[in-house]
Length: 73
Image 1 (spheres, helix red, strand yellow):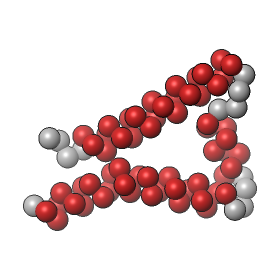
Image 2 (cartoon, rainbow, N blue to C red):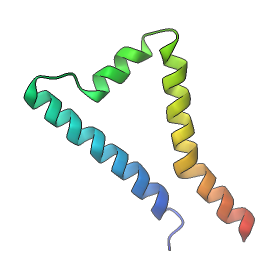
Image 3 (cartoon, rainbow, N blue to C red):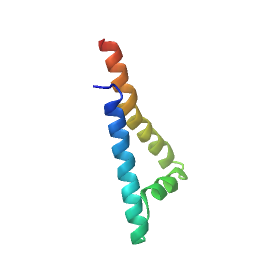
Image 4 (cartoon, rainbow, N blue to C red):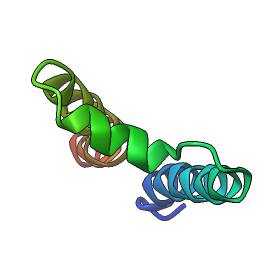
């Protein structure tokens, strides 16, 4: 298995879900996920939490699997 496959699959699934729900929200006149995140990033307390959560998700999907494969080889 390609070492990038799990990371690419996870990130692709998240991106596809966000795009699909944003398209649905725009068509139904509801707020989008992207707009909610952008609005949250303007708040002084929520912004570090959002950025930290996204950084942790990126670490979990990309960096951690690669480091585990390198150290187990």
